[in-house]
Image (cartoon, rainbow, N blue to C red; front, side, top):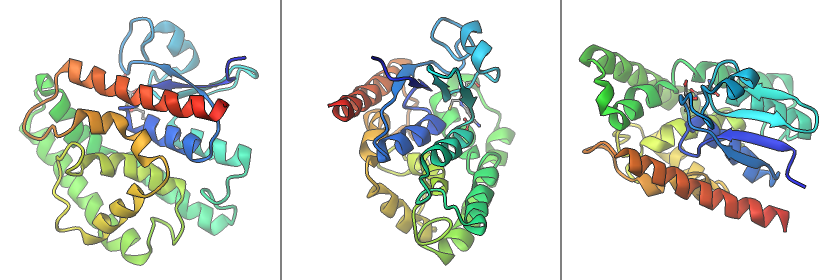
Length: 251
Ligand SMILES: N[C@@H](CCC(=O)N[C@@H](CS)C(=O)NCC(=O)O)C(=O)O
């Protein structure tokens, strides 16, 4: 029987990667249904069938085929999964510790997430001709957020909210990690030693490489925008690697 838990998305998407990483880390089987972000065609996140379940038209989407329960928003999914399965190592049950994780998850959207909007999207979609003003505002926002992470969260503890990994780190990493030199190479982390230390620690977390297979495939995009074919190939490679992992879980 096919798995009742379905995740819709592509591995190149940052919030999709965060949810997939959690599922792999906890060895929870699921079915990944490739869904193109922004496309109104069949299999796209703006197709009426998808919008009927997920009105915001974004990936990831999650569906429990057995109960009909659907959910969008990567952070809502990660919290839900942790609550459902009592993964209190990654989402602590202590109210104060949990609140610190939530604090970061809320902050993430208009701050760390700007990394994709200000640094990845303009490099991937040069055809969209982002204005200089847009790019410099985005860059200033990213620098500000990274300085706060460097001098705040990661100056005080090994991970974002303490000495243990939580879903806050996983969510932050899919945005920040993608920028490093071994991936897209679009940000200079030299002045940020605490972030560099944390990035190295995050790289050691199980399934890091599998979840980031699409980025290894895409490579450095700092000098030249990748072709659409390059992005499709990166997603295909990411999907292949995930499928192997999922097959291993079902054995
Ligand atoms: N806050 C959302 C962001 C989701 C998001 O921005 N997804 C992008 C792909 S990375 C998307 O689906 N874009 C397509 C669109 O907006 O049409 C989350 O964390 O799930």
